[in-house]
Image (cartoon, rainbow, N blue to C red; front, side, top):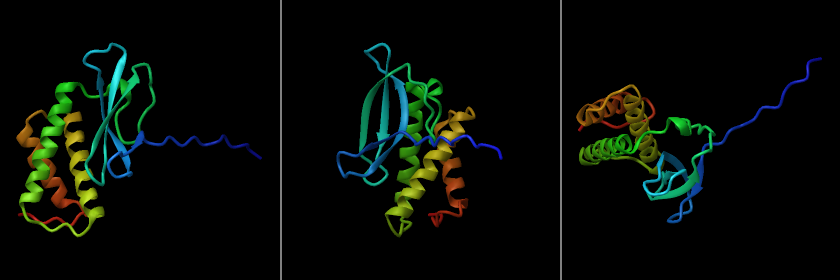
Length: 150
């Protein structure tokens, strides 16, 4: 009989939200602007949108389930582009007047928008308007959200 090797489960990088106590998700990693060898890890709360940042040694090479390897993290300019595109897309969803039934549907819609934008940036798209339009188009077609066009 073959002896099976144990399976190691890698949990996504998380942190507890100081505002509401929910489990936050790692949003991005960037070099600290003033301290060499330190990377800033930014976490976002899916429940209340609170943002927290934590410093970590740059030598860590773990991989997050929900994001790129630390060595392949987005730079500061790209992180700003991601944030701006996500904020604009979410404002469009809110302005559409589409009712979101509950917190889970809202969180799912926000997560899908973020994932679509990150994926497009990862493929090289840098036009903020295209990022917003494409993410909204993909969100509308997603079976896991029931957001209607506004």
